Amino acid sequence: MSSRLLSCLALIGTAALAACSTDPMSPTATARPTTASALLAPGEGVRLISDSVDARGNTILVQEFGIGAYTLPTGEYGTVASVVIQSILPGPSTPVTSKTCLTHSIVRTETTPGNVLTVKKSGGCNKDIEILIEQQATGLRATFRFSMVPGKTVIDSGLLR
Image (tube, rainbow, N blue to C red; front, side, top):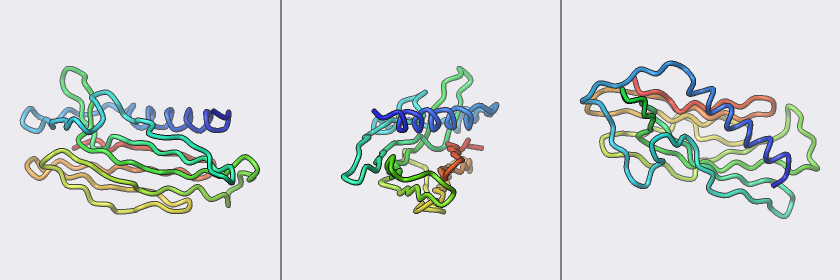
């Protein structure tokens, strides 16, 4: 793996941890979500699906992020849905400036029963991804935010409240 890619992964991981470092409130016992087997496991916030380099030297990174976070009284962390995002990062021959295009797109979304996902922003060149999660039975809501532009990365899984 290139040092640039490792730096990017470290930055994404740090941003994901920082986004989840606030003191979350636990949903009530009746609002506890269930985890589908195809989604991320409890305690798993992000999963690397693929990491490759195209013919131009651009890095193509595909990751699955947990969205709609909750914390049980036991301290267990989990999510009720997931989104797979493909990011295309310019190759090492492209100088990184404020005009560098980092392209992100939603590959797929998945959720557990009883949750509804609404894509508010679908990404693009230096554009954010934003997805609203709503639990119909409990009325709990969360907003997943993914923003990666030159010099700034924010990944917020969205806490159900």
